Image (cartoon, rainbow, N blue to C red; front, top):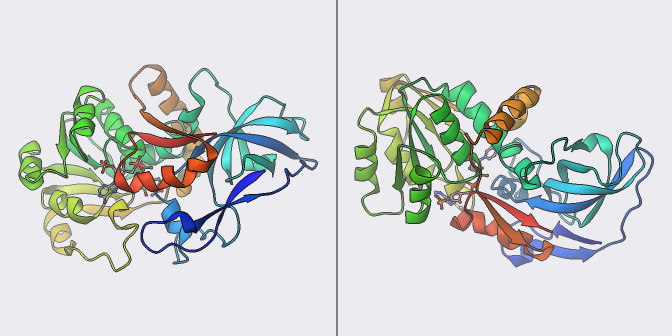
Length: 329
Ligand code: NDP
């Protein structure tokens, strides 16, 4: 039974030496457990944080233990009456081909009419992140301008589409022509701006003639520096992530924002999705409804093969993924 353990803590971009493939016995499920065959493994930017031992909101991965994250799998053996062979489940599970776990660590997937990998994206953790961050902190009103960075990605694409549902004007920031086109042509955003182009600051300014009421922050760094200059009075800035700094070896130094916050009386609030878990079910229903009615489109990048999990993870930091990155086992 193949598994991937954390061999060492990375410095900068995690190289191959950070991941060690091991072969172990398939553990037999005990009473109250199931044996799961991994079908889709999610790779997510936040995992970079767990690979280092700096204090954070989730415990670091342990050295020489399997890495873990959201996985969709199929039950191949059950020692719990509520779960049957052939049931599909999702949970935060170790990176192993076959996983024996207590059933309280997984959720049964009830609706299998949609592609299963959606439970790792819009109907899973990243969809929930978009939903709660935007609606609880961003609180977009009709006619307001909502800006989102990493806009074609798993979280960003859903943020922008929910903002459209709420009647906002949506401007997405992403890297490269193809992604920017996708924002307006497929996702229905009002504008898409390429942060890698030389005239990023000027084209962004032109795209927000009425300023920015909500900035859903996914990337930090220079993109953020440009956007924050255009905040309106009482703007809201849900700070979801700062992927541009995750592989930095030094300190992330940038502009100071206090002056902007005072001048605009804007609210900037970081959040961690786990803290909204009491609201997951209700939000999940609404997200599923939007997916069913084609109000939310989800793009997915599928990498094939257990051995390619580290590569798929690294690709996130180069924007090689288009939409949610998953690995099909
Ligand atoms: P994405 O699907 O958006 O993939 C990551 C994307 O980030 C890439 O495709 C790339 O898009 C962009 N990116 C990578 N490096 C840089 C860079 N240096 N500067 C600017 N953009 C970059 O990932 P997710 O949707 O899963 O995650 C988006 C953000 O949300 C991350 O910051 C993540 O940490 C955060 N997050 C936070 C949670 C929370 O609870 N607070 C929960 C889940 C996610 P492009 O090609 O456009 O550059």
